[in-house]
Image 1 (spheres, rainbow, N blue to C red):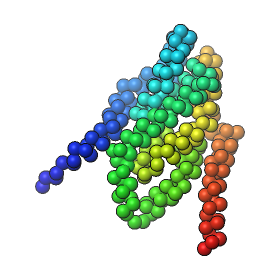
Image 2 (image 1 turned 180 degrees about the horizontal axis):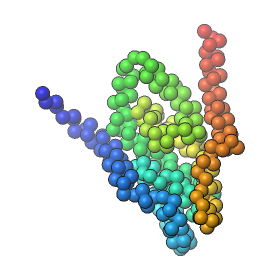
Image 3 (image 1 turned 180 degrees about the vertical axis):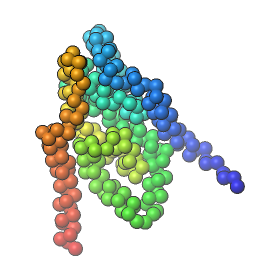
Image 4 (image 1 turned 135 degrees about the vertical axis):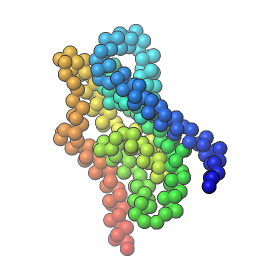
Length: 242
């Protein structure tokens, strides 16, 4: 039995997603050694010299590279974030990191939504059961849920970019919660990057678990809980009316 080929428009819609997958696979194999702390440590003097001679070009190149890393889910997002602090300081380093991460996240969100998200969202809407109820709950409280996911990075960043695209979250909600939600974590890791030169000089490695230390994760959890407050109030009011 033969099956008809999908309409050409469907394949065209999936081309960005196919490109993301192919580049991610190639990048994971070919670029792992170049997007690492070891590569940054070995080339830090050359990077600083190039930055001093070409500051504006370095800034644009860094943001563009960060966008590519996130959009194609390449290895090296954490070293890139620390590099932002190492090269540009807490500010504008944090701003460059947050902009690059947000734009890259939006691009992969659009690629996944265009290739798979719309069709999958329609299938979920047409179904019954727990999956539909869970998906609808996320949509109804999309901003709070997504903002909390960004504040407390319990999910890998690329996973948090893909899930909203698959369930039909609006682009504006996704972009806003990504930008504002990653600000605290972005500042923390950029701050770590500011002191990276001294860490390398001592022959040590940066403490990437700093964001999970109590004095940092505590306020982030508080902000995440606070983001749910409007939904809690709405639920209480709804129960009182019924």
